[in-house]
Length: 408
Image (cartoon, rainbow, N blue to C red; front, side, top):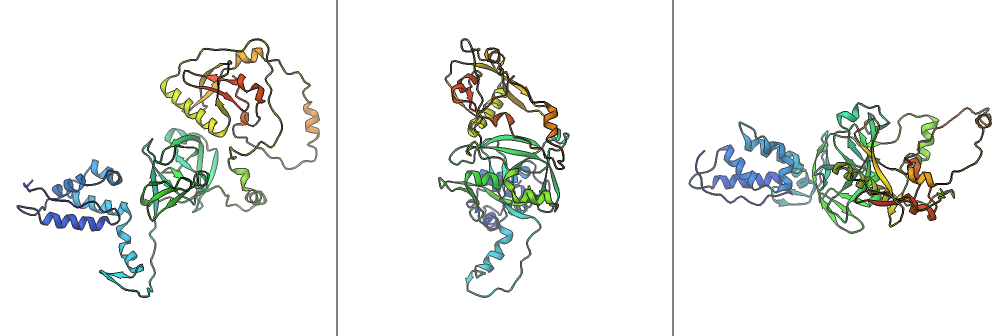
């Protein structure tokens, strides 16, 4: 490699990377004692002056540079992935600019959009993963891993091109986009290539994407999280079913049936769960949890607290906490060990209806439906006077349930 003096590389131009590379090449020609012509030297100069968020767009190229012409390869890929320069000429025409001259004129032209569209991506500060912001998707999704895809599909969604997308479960994530606070949300685990922030997430947290300024805006706090634009070969995901039958029309007429309930909506029934006990309060020592399981328990409890299913407690009751593996997955579920509390609970005594009387009422029925209750144990509130008896604890977790808990 030839010895050259230091050159002054201009500040990176986010709005027009192609123009920035032209300025860099002019700088290379002015280097002393002679112009910089070697591709490797140009590559090293450019890399050393890339902002971190821009360098992340071409991380794979920086980790494994092209062996023959690393500079040209980096230049081409960075311009393409930035998603700005290919449209520069079109924007000049639409704004009435041409070769530095400003003039107003009529444009009679047709612009053919690329097969892959430019999308806004926002990076999560916790996981360092970029999420596609897609207002056209009804739900928020995260990609399923190889192990999860071995299981049978629990639900089928449809992409905008009518292709099917299998869903293998749900997972609650805590996301940090450098806005007012962390965002806790339950994502569907689906057969997609990139994680998606759908309309459900954006509507609930009152977030609005701004493609022109490449950011996600919080309408409450007026804060914004800067993202980046790039191409994504992905169609919007919809819950709506393409088949046209009376059942599908009925679901389209009442879309709220297939959507998750709002945690702030009032309970529509008056049934409450009583826990009538005898004797002194049940007390148990906290049990240690492995670091990974403790992290899962904290995340699950934070989610349930967000949904209003539990709250921090100072009760004199305390039942131990267990972590139980979910069947068919690698996930864990926190479960309270309420055997001691059950021992002091007065048993309910009432006659059970005869199954024959129930089935007799079904005579003549032709259409039957099945309702899958999400977190069925949390559908019935616990009586306020008995909430303090449901405390479940670990070394750093002490919570009581506001809705019926899972009894162990």
